[in-house]
Length: 187
Length: 249
Image (cartoon, rainbow over all chains, first blue to last red; front, side, top):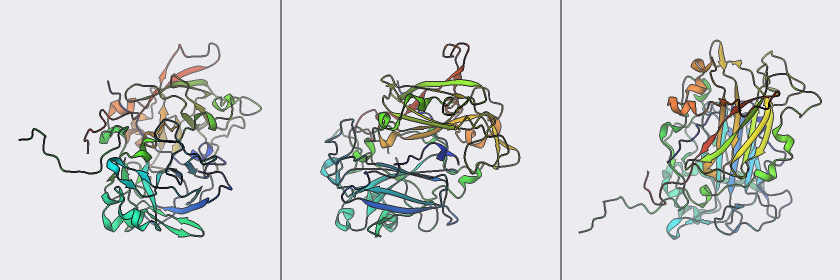
């Protein structure tokens, strides 16, 4: 028998009383060698930053291993690697920042290789369900060109998934609507 | 002659271990005009199919590490005094769609106080704050997928969506599951709430049976005798796809 899922509802405007953690933005502990910040702004359809958004990310470590304990592949050996980050604040100004390491390539089925990427969830008041996108990296031109997921994205929209180098880390803005609307995925 | 059905060659399929693809009406639409804030906050371009790769079928194991103590699940004892309101337990189990319990997974909740006011700087509705109530809790499910909170019943409250708009009383739930694909944020409602017919957020779920899955049930058996009423709320997250190679897209 297959049971039906519980439906999604919006996080609403007041999630910040519960969901942000002091170390939420840290996919790796502070001081991890090679740690970088990925920052950005989440914009609504009027081009305004969304102050009450919550971003969550999930990724592999530089060796392509996950901090997953459920038995898929070799777990990460990077000390303190969580691979999961959550950014959201009660006095949010529309920006987010996560502290992480750049992930390595990970496999897809059939021997294909996925370019380094980070899965992203966007929650906000006014969103009845999450939106899912992916961060890829501008300095991975060859790997991106061979990535099987990017290949599914219309060529003229792929750029919205590419984080650009900035301040020693990367910049990745998210636009829910508009001419440069970020690509979101059906997961 | 081959008996294989004709298929369009697709080199990218879901990785074995992939999750069920859900019916379109399993969740509310992102574009839902009765809830006005959706207007500028929903993608207008079609979503791109994301195969479930290893990134999507894995997830963080946060259950034990995020819960600081057993007190995290008791919202009645987070301050000097007791909060005002109707004491309740909220308990249930977290399952996947095959009915298997999801163990050691993080469950986070947040809610208004008995007067319908959140302890949030942006909540300016003139109902009293309760100095003994913060309205946030967290716990991890046990080996059978069970969770349990002690709290007070939240009040309904008005909001600015339309003239005289009210939210039915609800508790927000955040669930990590065990894979990125299973992540869910929802709201738990209380049986028989008179505001149901008027709330666009509740009614954004089009299927009446699906709406009912967001409503807790009162249980006399789960009460704390002479102490707290009890509501039960089971949560179902996506489970494994029927077969690893089922073509559903």
